[in-house]
Length: 477
Ligand code: ADP
Ligand code: MG
Image (cartoon, rainbow, N blue to C red; front, side):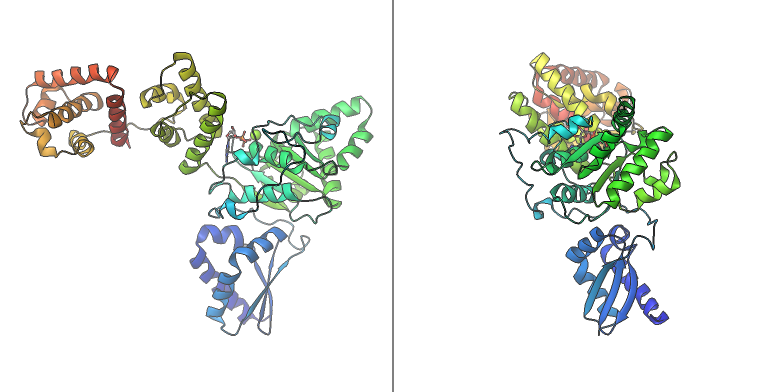
């Protein structure tokens, strides 16, 4: 390969980067290398089969287009997988691929012997024999919502779940990392549910702690050999929360198991709260083995994804609690304000459910705000101006700001004016006389009357209460 080829490759990369954007570029193309050019064929290599097939399926044309812009004579691109031995430590893959819509993927496999509601239990003999961790029937692919932050992890997990015994393994191990509550366990358990198809495919889901417990218990019972044999007889080993794998002997046992499984072509899937390189207590050799497959990060749940998760949760809750009605505005409010993670979203909905069951009251924004206030990340309260209040109230009620300040006393102006005064009193530190002055030079007793009036109404009139909450939120954004 000539240095001219390499120069050209650099320029093609830049074109590609400009075309697909930095995020996609670094997700999919950062580790692509030019292997050579033969006649009109460009040979490129990537480190994993998964990358290869993904790029082929989604970016083949763009890639060729970028080459042809530099070298019009090129007509073919050939992608190959580099052997792992050449580059044992690939940089981690960042997830940034904008959702290839899930509907493009074939439907999930039907599970043998599934009950009418919910998937079948995974073949429990292996699970029990090895002390597999219990699976939560709610954590399935059907309930896992795909969004920007988890597209790649989801696609990879689905791919593993659909594999058949004896299939070539595309990426090994599959290593998924993400912060607390971002869906690792949900995804891994989905994989375990869906992957146990028929009696001859064994997917074992274990937390790292369970792995240690099973192993230590087996040694105590002097069946360590049987335990290892059984473990090595499974097709897919799924280990959750690897960061909790502690202790030299369990770590070295884990290494043996991992190596044995990978070397014999079986799939290993791992989740942890950090990338392999940050698992300080593991040996370097081990870390690089973990990094040698597909490493995928799941990012924070975006607002859209949070809203979708909430919606699907409410729908699920309704099956058991038909009266559970959550107004759309409340869902939006929770999705906007509860930003930490999926657990807090679940917590927020559970509280609403409990509240609505215990009090029998319909769910309102005000109630929701009260119930979930400690789940909301504290924010610097914004300083709100009276002018802003007037502007937003006027817009909401379809009157002009001048109307609010005028002396007109028609009902369609009086109520908005009172609401605006009430908000001015409750959201700013201005005094009643000052507020009166800013509302066309009114007396402070007029303002006081308006504030009392609205306070009274809010307790009786739900729709007014919601309107006011809505206004407050607009002002606080
Ligand atoms: P982790 O294991 O990463 O700490 P979990 O898988 O336990 O997180 O997720 C925490 C909660 O958030 C669970 O209730 C889970 O069902 C929910 N959750 C997280 N991500 C998603 C998602 N993409 N779709 C549906 N629910 C999700
Ligand atoms: Mg978890």
